[in-house]
Structures are given as C-alpha cells and as structure tokens.
Image (cartoon, rainbow, N blue to C red):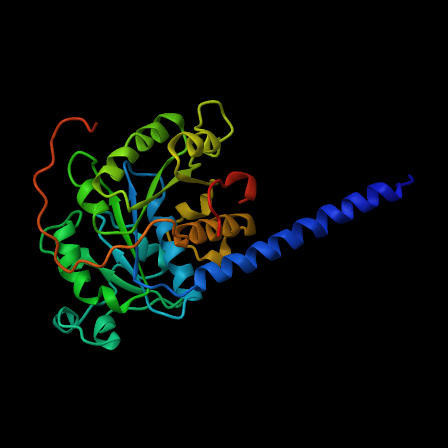
Length: 312
C-alpha cells in the first residue's frame, strides 16, 4: 500500500503541530501560575448539591498552586463531609493541628503556618471542622476568625466550602473571596440552577469573579440533555470550564495527579490557570467581617475544545 507524501506531511503536522501548541500553552500556563500577586488571592469552591466533585477539583487546584508558586499556599476545609479538599490533597482526617493561639496572633510567616500539616506538594492545610465544637459546615465567621489573622502571609488561599444552600449562606461565602468557583454537574437542569445564581452573586459584590465549572459526572456530556458550555459562556458572560469524567477520583483513597490520565491533568491545569487569571480588582483581606443579616428562607431569585473563556 502506497502512502502519498501529502498524507505523510499532514500526519506529521498533526502530531508535531499539536505538540508544539501544547508546549506553548504549557509555558504560558506556568507563567500564569507563578506570577507574583499584589495581594493574597482567595479562591472559594462551592457546589449546590453533592456529587459534583468540587472537593476533588479544589484539592487538585490547591496542590498544583502549592507546587508551582514560590509563596505559601493554604488549603482550607470548611465543608461538612469527610471527603474534602485536604483529603484529596493527601492529608488524612487525623492530621494534627497545633498552635492555634500562635496563629491567632501571627506576626510572621512562621507564625501563620505554625502547627499546620503540609502535603508533599507543599500545600499547608487548615481543617476548620476540627476547630469548632459542633459538627457540620463551617460558617463564614469561623473562617474569618481562624483565617483572617494569617491570610496576609499567604499567596493563595483555597477554601472548600462544600455544599451551600443559596437561600441560607451562599451570600456570606461569596463575601470571603475574590474568585468563586461554582461547581455543578454538566446536565442541563443542574447547570441552569447554577447559572441562575450568577446575577445574585454579582449583586453581592460585582468585583467577585465567577468561574462556572461543569463536571461531566456521568460521562455523557455530548448528550442533548447536557448543558452547552459555549452557550453558557455567551449568555452569562462568565468563564465556563468543562471537566471530563474521571472515575479514579471516586476511589476510596486519595489519587495523586501523577496517577490521572494526561488529558485530565491538562484539563485541570487549564482550570487552575483560569482561576488565577484576574479581570476584576482585588479586595483587601478582611480579618473579621460584620455579621450579615439573616438570609430569606424562600426560593432564591482534557482538552482545548472543552474549555471556554480566558486561559492565561
């Protein structure tokens, strides 16, 4: 069988052209992740319902930033479940936390990380559920009390807020960060519910940047019942990122990024860069916010072709 020179040339260009493009993108992404910040960046990860994989995504993002940045990166667990950001980052549930009093009066970076466990990637972990008497999700006031005194010593703070009810405390969660990573399933119903909250988030503080992450939990994102990231990006004017289904993330033990397929690692690396790309001004860290008024109880008003929005 004879193969024409044209077919060989096209195949060669397809292989090496795509490799060259990825190398260039990787270089740009690395620069974005390592770029110095004028102020601490606070990234909040929230999901409206369980099972969307927000904690796994938060753990990967926080670990990636800790590995690639020169400054300290703090991972905070404020969720109610046993499987959270720190678990996915490799910190067991019994990881010891000491010297809380020293951190409360922090004057140096050493004080700010005193007594906190560190993962092999360099991520420093603070589990707020170990610092409160009652089990369950942690409030924004606890976050401000424990994280506020040490926030200024960190480059980036990633907080896993777990599942939050938009009618109860989502507003107060929004006020603690610069970037809100709202994670939901990729099916149309879940995506529409999350999309409906974006105007309310902007009403709380228009400077908060929103990134909508669609998790293809069922592995059927191309079904007609799935939301269209491209359409959501156009209609909502927010960055939308689709994370493909990865069954290894559902393992009984934490799965390191080195055990994930290359396609999945590339996808999450792009998301990390997206969260570190800023098109809205920062706010100064607040050590102790004024308690918010009671919320109403009624209803609230991979690969490149799967990623839309700014990338670097």
